[in-house]
Amino acid sequence: MSVQVAIWGANISGGFLRSEAEQEKDGSFAYNLRLTQFADALGVDAILFPTRYLGGLGGEDGSDGQLDSLSIVGALAAHTERIHFISAVLPGFVPPVTLAKMGATLDVITSGRWHVNLVSGWFQGEQEMFGVPWMSHSERYRRSEEYLQVVKGLWQHEEFSFRGDYYQIHAGRIRPFPVQKPYPAIFQGGNSEEAQIMAGKLSDWYFMNGAPLDELQRQMNRVREVAALHNRQVRFAVNAFVIARETEREALEEFQYIVERADLTAINKFKNHARGAAGMWSRAAAISDFVANNEGFRTGLVGSYQQVREKIDELHRAGIDMILTAFRHPLDELGPFFEEVMRAQKGNVMS
Image (cartoon, rainbow, N blue to C red; front, side, top):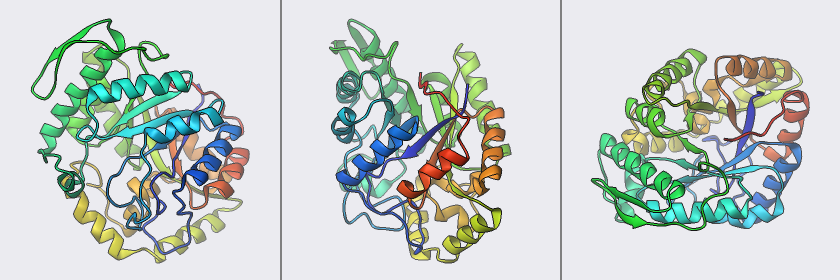
């Protein structure tokens, strides 16, 4: 099966670079509609809408706001035909029963093209601002494990009961069930040991921050070990900020241009916010590692079209089934990327 390509949705304003270099920052619904329809026509496999209640992802402060990652899918679905939607969800903000109901509804609306990306949450200030109790890293993942057990149980059983430390369900019923069987594929991020254990036990896809191949392989091996103990298989996706140009020189010049204009204030602010993120950004050292969202430059998709294609092939051979891509100017760069890099890549299987 060919490697799949996903893109970041733009529901959080401000772009994906902590740099003063020009980039697309529009987070409006109108822009997201254009982006999603363009991606759908190109053959992009999926679009991931991140979640944030405070601030942005790149260097901006998110002053223009954030569109909800679930609601936006309901509005976009009728304007697309093939692309899959992935909504990031924070357990502290959306109860599992609410997600089970909304998710089943979105899967019906999209005719089986919706998925959830459960993010346990590392932004302490965001949660405390809205009265969400701040938990230790390990406790956040214990809660997330229960969360997924509840959601999957409600999606698969006529009647479901659950008694845990965080959630209790008494003969709960959700109708309609999702279109996808046994349920919409569950994505999950995080680079810590707790995240890898949870992915092996409960998730269908494991999202990794950008990293060199050896680091990615260590994470995948650990998830596979856990999955094997539970007779499961997990698929893998990695984040990457893409600069693909006709020549390597052009790509490297643009990379240098972006990094030379790194927004150090935004980077330092981000580092302070991300102190509670165990595992993620633990190996980031260079300024460039923090310029692109989720360590996107560390994956190495910067070069000529041929070099980027070869790197993607290398990642795929190592066991990565999806590349989550970001671009400075998505509407300008996605077309050439698909034409020159992904021309031979086909398939849209998200199960």
